[in-house]
Amino acid sequence: MVRHILVRTVGRAHLSHKLEAISLPDNVSADSPFGSYRLEFKRKGNTLHFKRTAVMNFNAMIPAAEHEHLKAFLNKVSKADAIQVLFYTK
Image 1 (cartoon, rainbow, N blue to C red):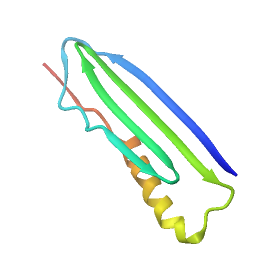
Image 2 (image 1 turned 120 degrees about the vertical axis):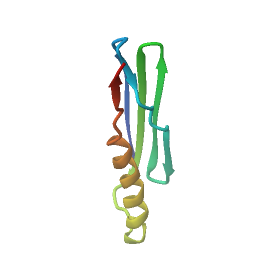
Image 3 (image 1 turned 60 degrees about the horizontal axis):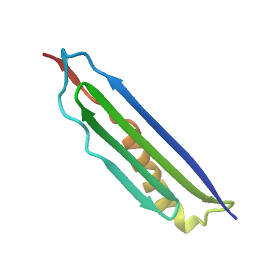
């Protein structure tokens, strides 16, 4: 039996006209038999929008031969979740 876990986070930050993003992070996309992950950033005027979607597909037992593939997928997700947006004052 495969368990599907969906986590979706959508948000926005209204920025002061005095703040400017140094640069927006690249969008991140990862797909594997264990799930999929998307992280997107967009700026519209003074509003920064972000959307994060993670779908995890886990069997009750994951064969030992698949552990490295699972670890690589989860590491990519973890790294993306640590992304920061840096700003400077105009």
